[in-house]
Length: 409
View (cartoon, rainbow, N blue to C red):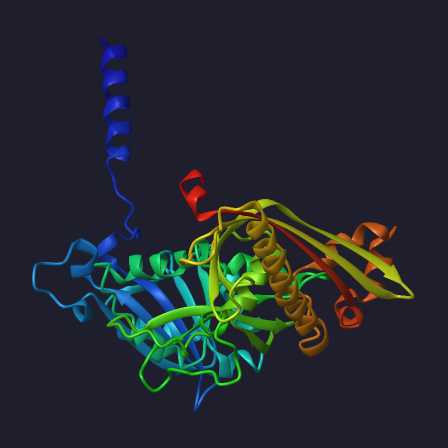
């Protein structure tokens, strides 16, 4: 009997301890979840930190007739660092800032030109920030970009940020750049970082090109330039190019597309080329990879000679009454025109990165690092500085099919 009572006492004691809660634990109602983090150059301090929070109504579902502006709130402060800014905001708002659901890190070009290594390292070291958070470099103030996040096809702003960047999968006018990508490239000895080029679309920012032929106009835009008119003001088009942690240049839509092809980050896209049968007209070609792009790097007299071989599948997506794009002869002519066009575009991009920017954003260094016996030999070769002496040979092979075969993709 005593044993039974003792066992019952022990069971009750264990149950009492197991039912006690943690006095210092925090529930959802105690946290304020950030969905976007903006960093601008400060006027009276180092930076201006802006955090866009999801409001409780947005987290629990919007009621009918509620406005999108009610779904989020933005808090900004000038501060000396990201950590101190968050600490100051914590002292002001009623809940503790939590970055575990942050979708985008938005950095202004003005700040990026001065160097952003400090801010990238801080965010990477923060256990709350997810490594797949996207890095956007804006051609306007970061706070201006965040304030204009007004989705029309999505109910929640957090979901809108995710959906807005998915266009890279089917246009290739930008690429998906995540925080872990930016950080690893920043620390790398054979490549350099890039960021998603972003901006706010208004009537004042629309651009028209007088020095670009009609076949390239649609792909020559960058964020802040496209003539699109819509209630959704945010746009991501092009890439921000870095040398170490400093912004040194930009790539437009076509250059970003070429970058995607060379780096095998390309799924499919549409390009417009001159019609070789009727030169005053154009042809739209839908492209997707046939094989991975092959790159080979040789060092000759200490200068890199880089061969790039691209193999794609193409489908004619536009036609006219005159051209017979189902004939083998015309398909061959269109294919050669497409090859020459894309070879010129890719070569132009690569020489731009080498001679103008002097920064290897493609990562060609990884193809030559194997030729060095020791790590010290590789580091002393100083690939990132020597990249400006590179020469390129680009070969493009596109297997063109008639638009009648479009359904066979």
